[in-house]
Image 1 (tube, rainbow, N blue to C red):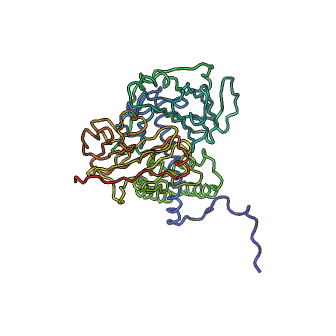
Image 2: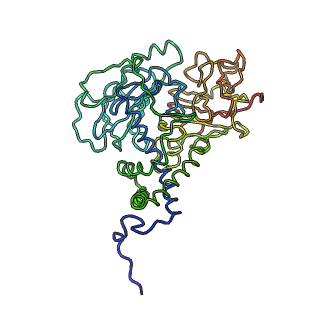
Image 3: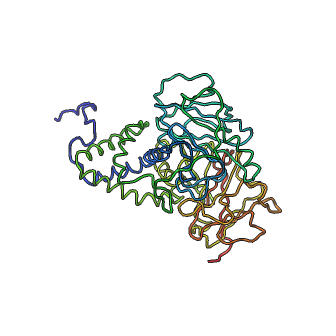
Length: 467
């Protein structure tokens, strides 16, 4: 009779031990590592590039950028020509900053926004949100502290609440709603100028201000093509994966993945051929994953009427697919209790949306997205960016409540396409590019129908055929 196996502790600590790695196994593990690690490497590279700004300002003149431990704000909607973050929002004034919170906790200022909708979304290295700060949560004006998982300092008097990031690397993306009117642009400016983030050592209990309409612009310093800046590169992924494994602790259920990925890195460090095989697998994964991640059918789940809706947004857990596709298609979504996202790139027949046709999206009377915050419908090109147009119009919704025209029965019909629909419907028209495009509906502060999934966006119906 054979002897009984020894205790589990006697098994090799690292899968594979010192044995040779079979090439197809290397390719399998490397492919999984690439899709699993894509969001974290994306986050690391965004932090490195955007935190290289010498002071708070605007990268390429369009994107908030600041040194680590600070934040930069826009003073209006984001410009249509930026290519650093896909699916930008033209309903809010944005801010952005990255932090190393074990090394340097930061103070976050929240002015008195009154009844204006706002949210400060804070993301850890996994792109999961942590903390709850915004109008939905009844947050009070004042100073808040963001700290890392290992920071053990003293919280000074005058701090309203402390939020701890599960990882030292984190960032914050404030979003402050603004009507598309000159009056609201003027009203929001003094509030935006009080949105500040700075190292704890600079906190003195007073509300600091900065004129965000007068900040420097920095050279982008990196090439951009028609799509989003490439934040993840297969050829450097091998080395950056090690940084992820050492700085982002495993969640429950991830221990085996961490062991397999660590074994791959160790084997590749010993054997250049294994590293080459891994990099080849990263490249193949990138070539197939990146274009597929841009298709909305691979983002979230069905929402009805040909739309998909976000799933587990910014609360990914072990949902590695949606975490990865979102990191490529529309990174930094808000969590579901803050925002629900609906998206489609097909019409009611399942045919791809294209600017050669004009489409109607008809909200029946009383059936606008049920929200306590705001809603909007945006047109994006095939790369998930704005299409420049003479009206400078990229979305319609709550911010346009004074100009949208409703039907006699109370319904609201929005039009999307590249052909001018005429003066009678111009106010409800979203210009689209000539080629493929997609529609993206945001619902901030969703009510029951949004949260429980019983509300669905309207069908996208082809209205005219002018090929």
